Image (cartoon, rainbow, N blue to C red; front, top):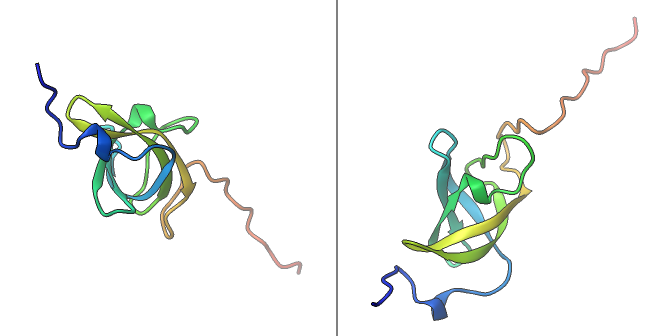
Amino acid sequence: MQLKSHAHLADIKVGRQQGLVKWFNPTKGFGFIEQDNGQDLFVHQSEIRLSGFRYLNKDDRVEYDIGLGKKGPIAQNVVRIKAAENEWDQNAEEEEPISKAS
């Protein structure tokens, strides 16, 4: 029996990689990361290493390992290393407004 996949094991990089989130659907719990080499990589919410609700925003910079799933390469152990600009982050603390003394 031969394993069919979109990539050969020899083509998968070893070690931590970085990329940008292309899109992520929090309702469905999955999305894709655009790797620095331009190829898309599937990411499932179960592989996101955040406390609380696990989600990613478009254009978040992430770091991850690459594993081999049933349909090809997948992102594993995903961590956000830089949030996308102009994106609301539900994990960020709100800052208190600065008011002028009268």
